[in-house]
Length: 37
Image 1 (cartoon, rainbow, N blue to C red):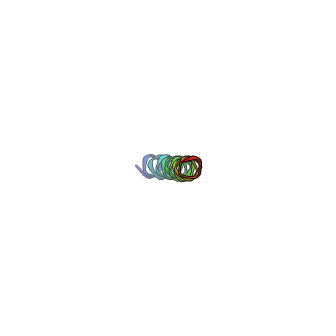
Image 2 (image 1 turned 90 degrees about the horizontal axis):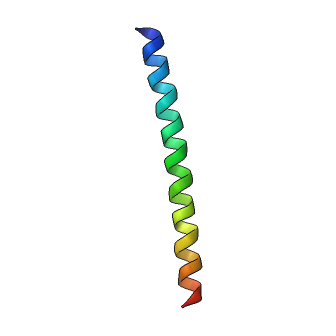
């Protein structure tokens, strides 16, 4: 039970990191596109 919770917490951290990176890239893209116009 405890090891399952640890696995879920680890997965959660991984997904949050992935999401943070994606939203950061999204912001960079928006900025780059905005400058071209």
